[in-house]
Image 1: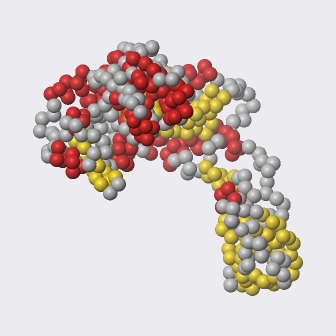
Image 2: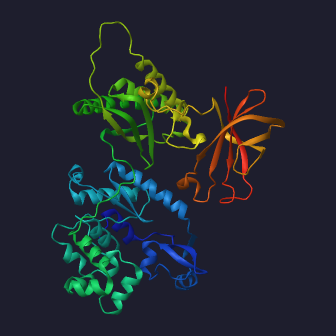
Length: 499
């Protein structure tokens, strides 16, 4: 592919006092090359080559141990940086990115100017990259890794693909090797060959990859992050550092976002402020709303609290050059008319309180009692973060715990020592918390099977009993394990007490 004029001139001059760079990792009990720069490729080094052989070919070689975690973090950072061009950014393995720039290229002067801008900016950040623009993801992948074309016009796919090796079709290594053994070394050989024999011998996946590269089969990209419903941004002539100016600009962006929300009759529930620093780093600040919002002042107030909470982690450096406010999640917001009763809407101050506290201390700082879909007692109820004010103010739901449940249920059942007249009968006495209890009455069992999709198929069944001791105290016990079928010695547990 064609590099930008900056990258080409840099490579033609060479890098004074800097040898070729390669990265090595242990593969099959041997140190082999897993990545290398352009200069290392020019002297004949290849991936998979032994490190000792590479040193023999180039004694001045700069060998660095590979760090996959650092490489992945760097690729994620580059993907964040590419959000300045399009929100549709997808990861391509461990060393590539896909950008869907449909409708975006004209904002940068066309496709050629777009490629030049991307590569020149990356070069200024110290990143050596390659880029190709085409109508198909597979075609761009093939050209950028095995070709030398920056922009591929519609209809030129076969001409560009023909001289490329079959590995350019993203085929498994064994398939590519099998094709080369029978003399099909270039993609052009496949274009001229009958399709039916190719499918019989090498499988339908070969034809799928070929059609994807030619653009005849659609290959949708999966963005790494949710695509915003609405967004507004500012590209600044001078970098911005002061937090107050950032908040003021955020309020102006919120006004533009409000106009978009009102036009569609929606309100935002999850907002994101993207701050693009001049050195390439991107900060994402998210703010949740307890009710659907389209008020610019309240949206700006959310980020005032969030920026104060993340102040220590938000390093402005030399300043931010792009600010973007996006709506990640929205919902229908019907306009309401205030009445003249003088009774305030109790949801408004509560929503403002929830928004302020959650923005300052995190979305999980406020909890509310909640019921969950589970027939195991300890999982059927608990606490959940407050996400929606409407759920807090709503009346009690119809679904409630069964009437035979105790007033207090322990989060973790407590082990007891119990005796029964028959192995599958009710307990006659039990020892709990160093106290002996004798059972006067018992009712049960209530059998509850385990949730196999969570606990596994071999998790024991429970038989619950409601018992009353001689003093009138009532307890809720269960026997774990069916006698003779699941275990030879069932265990007893205390799970709750009645009023």
